[in-house]
Amino acid sequence: MGIVLLVGTIPFDTPSVLDMSVSDAWTYASHDVFRAKPKLQWTKNEARAITVNLRFHADWSDPELRMQALRTMSRSNRWWPVVRGCGLWLGRFVVSKVDEKVRVTTSAGHALMIDAAVTLTEWGEGGEASYEPARIGAVTSALLRRTR
Image (cartoon, rainbow, N blue to C red; front, side, top):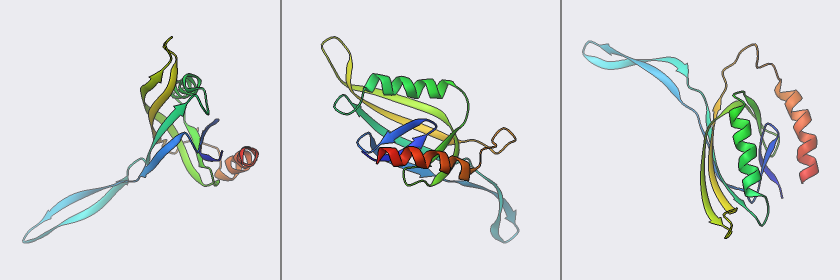
């Protein structure tokens, strides 16, 4: 199984990731001009957002354990390095939303299949965000090599 995305210490592997989208946005102020079209002025870059739709199934993982790990990470209220499986650095992100939908359970109520949607929001630059992409890449490349 290959890793599609590494969020902090949690790898999202190939069978678990249904799809992933990355959203970038920019804000412009509009200034009215007499007898002309409005002029636009760039004001800021919006925070990047990543949405990952996941499926955890008992055939290849422990769905309840994977959801518990996600919730623990999101409750930490800190940023995590995010790296694509190919080693591409995406940045520092916080887990801003986790949606869980239990699809199949055992007769005792244990989840056999869980669908989840995880939204990651880019962390703004600051003094506390001091990890360098090269250092993260060096650490994660060893982990990614072991899983291939």
